[in-house]
Length: 116
Image (cartoon, rainbow, N blue to C red):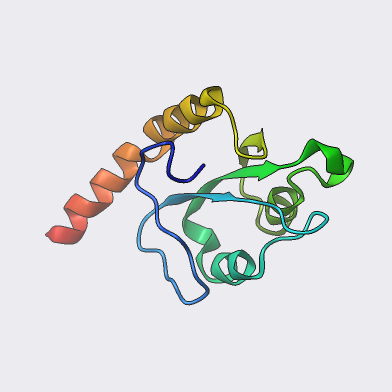
């Protein structure tokens, strides 16, 4: 899914420090677990996270998008969208709309003020 919305995106790693507000889009590992690199990244960057978007498999019942639910419980970040496995075209449109509504202007403002 990360390539499909054609929005600014980076692959996170445990030593990455965010410099501007972002949405976290992640999958759920195993039975509802947060991927380790995501857990470490969020520990250091949660304050700039404006929303959570997650994929999961409904076959896992209550563990569907478990990583997102755990991150929401840990940091109080709003859950913006959940989608099945790789998502549908409607999920892409939803994510694009969320970005334009919540982040695009905020990040452009931050970039302008960082350059001064």
